[in-house]
Image (tube, rainbow, N blue to C red; front, side, top):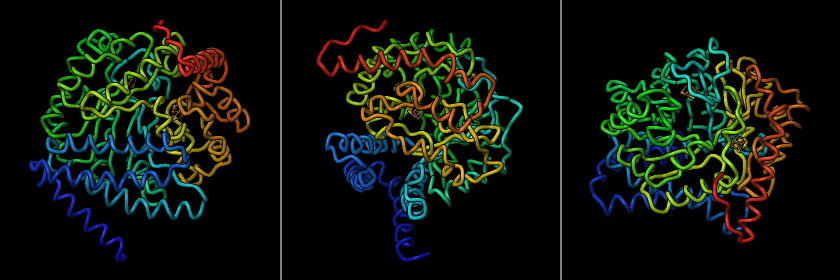
Length: 455
Ligand code: SF4
Ligand code: SF4
């Protein structure tokens, strides 16, 4: 270990013991977190291309919000969660990860992604309408060894210490906890319906400290039970209460549709969530892919704008960190896909550019992650980013609808399940119409016109 790395190790190790010890000491604890926030924000800004002060401020704010979340929640987290957060973030991500990222950048001339999503299995015991993962072949699964190897590559070759496990329902995949334990140097987020999280599983998560579930919910009991089945809402809240008791850092995940618009953008929804302990929340919007794609479920342009305003309001007024996978394009300088910031390994080993683009060319069973990232298709897609200069419309599926058909055609990307190509064939026209309507809605808003009520 060289001297710099040794110093960073000792600092992170010290921090991982200091933070739990300071959690009860308001002033000193806050000072330490504020110092960490300053350092991390400065580091994040080094990678921002734009010199526009407003855009740079968005990135700094986004980092600041993360540390405010840590400050708010650390005292209630299990000791192991506190230690893992500190050590995985400040040594593994910022030191070991940075060394690997610098090596990669030196060799390939651009930074590697910072996040990897792996869906080891597409099996699920629910049957939600609009499930984006439903059509994948459920008999195909990654082995424990394959997942472990891909995580090794992510860490050592790309410097990735943030890994999301999705699916399907990840808690059904039999090797989940073995992997979480084996790679305890990684910050794992898992997208789950939450209903398998019993007392034993919640306790195990609190003990491991490096696993952060994001539990799917659709708004209140009516919307949630309608999509996820009878009693789903109560079961989800009970799981949240268990995670809260065990000091697990966890969040919620919402899919915004035309139907649940009011339920998920209301203050009441967030206030109800806060009673059950999530520290963060993700807003996704329905994309017509997967099970019986239904363009009429896509939020209207006005609803998408109202979600944007709601998320901003929650951030200002509620003690919870909320992110929007599309509307936060300003904080990420555009789309994250095609390995610019992340990529998705499916249960069959195929590597998709984004969890919502079910088209691919390469498999981890034949190529390394580095080779796939540097394939002509992924490289050209990244060279086209941002797909436009207005980062409120970052997406190559729902905002910049010419991009995906062009790349699919040019590189003959293959659908990763039956019917996935519909996103660039018969569903394309509806998506393009909606994209244009959203562009016009933004234009009207920018011109100071009033936003139409949601329809
Ligand atoms: S939406 Fe999620 S919980 Fe529902 S069926 Fe699909 S994978 Fe399962
Ligand atoms: S393709 Fe769309 S959904 Fe996927 S990362 Fe880019 S903006 Fe997000």
